[in-house]
Length: 210
Image (tube, rainbow, N blue to C red; front, side, top):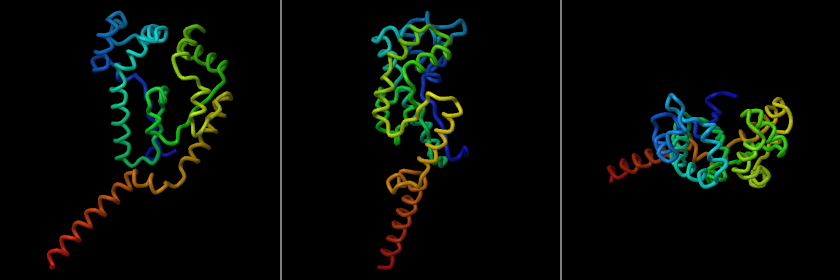
């Protein structure tokens, strides 16, 4: 996988909650300084416990950060587009909830059964079953996401199985571009600009001869 061909963007609140950012200021103003660590950074586990047990506060947090996250993603996508990346993978946990599925193609969902999802979340975050279940309940069920996907990767197996499945999917989405996809790519934009410039220049020369 060559870096200039494929790039992965992780869409979450890691950057927008950094101390001193606009998102940080809004969240602190809404939830109070009790959510801060001694160094002024947001205590993410504590904030998570608050929003994943209270739907209204979770919705508030999403509203506060949505514009910052969307802007950050769009800016990064634009920079990668300028660099000529052929494939940009957006890793967006709340893709459907944030309505970002309208701007992505194809939509790939990595699916696991509910028991495995709960177990892995508890191990990853070192949290209780109740806290992990609250986080799961705060998102659209994976079965529903699977029904909305163009491609589904079954992640009930090992990490090696997941990597192999991903390589197969990458080969699948790396097929030659359709005409529509080509004109939306950097190469297509360059061709369009050169064609327009050449056409304008040709018309000027033609008019000058008349």
